[in-house]
Length: 245
Ligand SMILES: [Mg+2]
Image (cartoon, rainbow, N blue to C red; front, side, top):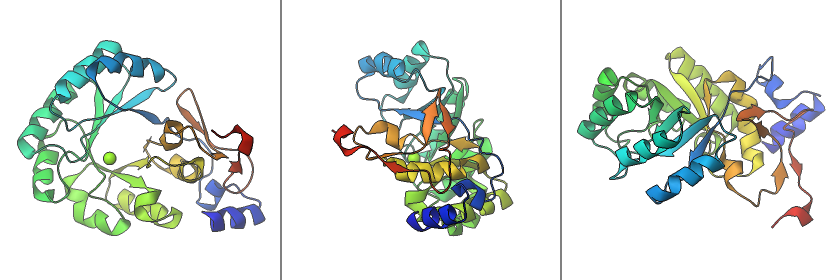
């Protein structure tokens, strides 16, 4: 990222231009609601007010109660990450059930070593299923493409911007939808990923919003919309250190 930052600054280009993005129109990002107690869900939904799309982690014993509680609070689009938490039977039942609840898609429903079963799920699921743990780099895509509708690309998973760009190109060849995701990370990684986000269908770039000691400023999110920084290079700056907790 540092090399790309220096290089594109020298070229007097924003980083996204280097990757062939013509207009910096980025998608909305989802915002992850960390589910603890069911009682805490209404408050967390309220805190997520500025975000138009929510992401909920499932794969627990009370998945349906969680979604019912969320749906009592909001009709916003919701994406679900099952985090490898279901078996085939449960995944088939859950995908049918979630389709009735305005759920956009489900990430990694089955454990990554159950690709054959995931392919069965794909053929019957009324909502798209996305690979996360099943798809680390571009080399995984030809192997898993038949079992998913889309993939989740993360810079921290694939190793960097060039490989992420390669994954985008490969996924398109296989007619897969693409989400750009993240870990919990600072604005450096999130901003770098955001520069690629105009090339993808969905963004889940909230990692810097989930921490309160981010040493950098870069990409911002306004009403759920990713807004790329202005200027050349990556567009990341070190915050005034006294402002850190
Ligand atoms: Mg995931």
